[in-house]
Length: 272
Image (tube, rainbow, N blue to C red; front, side, top):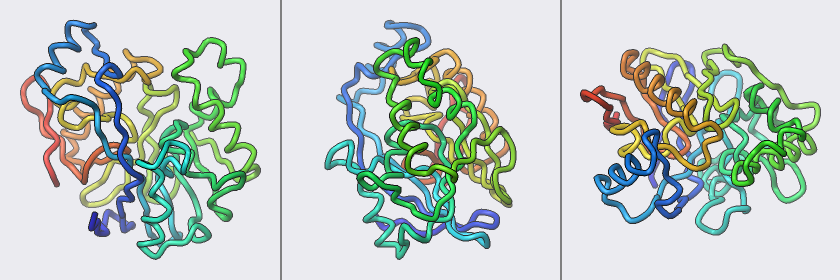
């Protein structure tokens, strides 16, 4: 798609497209219930959810870092293209020195694996400690709805294939110029990573899946949100903070780099 490197602080950043995720409109929910959802969907006017799946390459003095890793081959032919995209950018799996995971859902972490082995043989895995703690404890599965249980299998695979190279991280600096910011709700430990610079860039994972719909109406969520009310609060708070701080933003399902602009009751994500 002709993506180019963008300099942010101490890093050159490249968006890697893993593919397109599509789903029916019934994956959408709303903080105001069915009526709020139906009104928002009617106003939106699209027949289905169709969103990009992204991960990001960062080049800096400390080597090459990935933020998220895509789906791998597990989610069908429409996705799983990140390895080819990285190869096209001249990046080999052996060059990846660390992977920063926003949360342990398949479209962000299954790309860590190449069949029954680690795709990135030299990489350290940094993952939000609250997410790793929750999905790493099998007893939590019984109280988790079935459509939100995927993180348990992903976490078990991370433990198996990256044993000794996993670093659960709390909020704060995870490497020079990069800060983990908790954005809970979508999962227990869902987080974004702020790359600090003159024009800082927040890669916010799944704080928003649908840039146009959820910015104007942050009450819209997804059935995959572990705690919809907390996800709603995190979404409103990070939109407000990103607007106040004039951050660049992007994420797992955002097209390009954007700025957040307040527009009365909601926000707009404008191309940066």
